[in-house]
Image 1 (cartoon, rainbow, N blue to C red):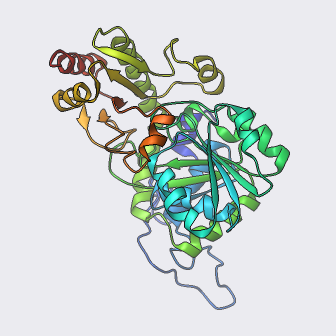
Image 2 (cartoon, rainbow, N blue to C red):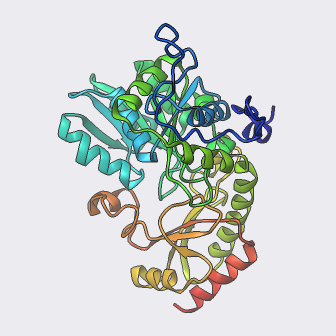
Amino acid sequence: MGFTTKQVHAGVSPDPVTGSILTPVYQTTTFVQDSVDEYLSKGFSYSRSGNPTVRALENKLAILEGGADCTCYATGMAAIQAVLQACLNAGDHAIVSDVAYGGTYRLCTKVFQRFGVEFTFADTSKPDEVRAALRPNTRLVLTETPANPTLKLTDIEAISAITRERGIPHAVDNTFLTPYYQRPLELGANISIHSTTKYFDGHNATVGGAVIVDSNELDSQIRFVQNAGGVIMSPWVAWLTMQGTKTLSIRIERQSANAQAIAEFLESHPKVAQVRYPGLESFPQHELARRQASGFGAMMWFEVKGGVAAGKKLMDSVELCTLAENLGSVETLITHPVTMTHADVDEAERKRVGIIDGLVRLSVGLEDAEDLIDDLRRALDRI
């Protein structure tokens, strides 16, 4: 089956009792057992350890990513946390992309470092820098590509070759492109991580996360953490996410086409200092973007001339674009990472990796591209 067929049909079947075409929401704490000897014969006992609605979503996402299995979580950060807990012990070392979501940076530096885990934030776009950062106690490489918010790319195949040499897992945060455009496991990675809050949901209705792995052994390690820590996705969230997933490819195609048109408009505007979008030939890693993924996605950033004050004026002047955190939704969202999504990243570290003060991040939605361009044009005229 093709991807769009799988996103509709994979992992789900009509309810055997009623014939309902949609998987029921099994909003229950516990599951009655037929007898002591037949405990778990139906597969479920307590919803923290497994729930039929959540399991249906896990099956669907595993198939879409081409993985062995999937676990789902209360948030995207819970998914990142589960991977770190499953792979790292006190005294271990991990390499993380130097440009990553601010919550990932915060979790590593403010939580896991307190328990004796060491981190190197390396430029994972340069395989030699990753190789140089390896230590005898390195147990995980976690990359984010495209990175949030600079969109810097990591060559998944190249980094996976390095981790295979050392026998350690390579985890990729694949939130920005989804398995429709990029499948890290097919490129050699071992773990693909998602904030399902973003494109899988697509409607600003839920928060959730998912981890898809390439082996049952890894799945068992991560599933143990999921159950032990109780960082589970609720059945209702899983049900809503399943409905959003059915239209993933259609939405992201339209969003990406809009993003291309907006990026081309902004690149030609005299008040815009620079634009970064993987679909532009001016994007520094355009060829890698073409080789590694089948589409460029709907995320971009730009900087207006006039510095932070001009950027704030633009964001306060837009009317159709919505000033809000989150990304991947049907609504176009505009964000100032330095004061919003990446406020917890040290200023010196932000500037070192290119998260400049005037960076404006745009998550392009489903609106008509012409309307979005008109909105941005009017806002730019007010600067």
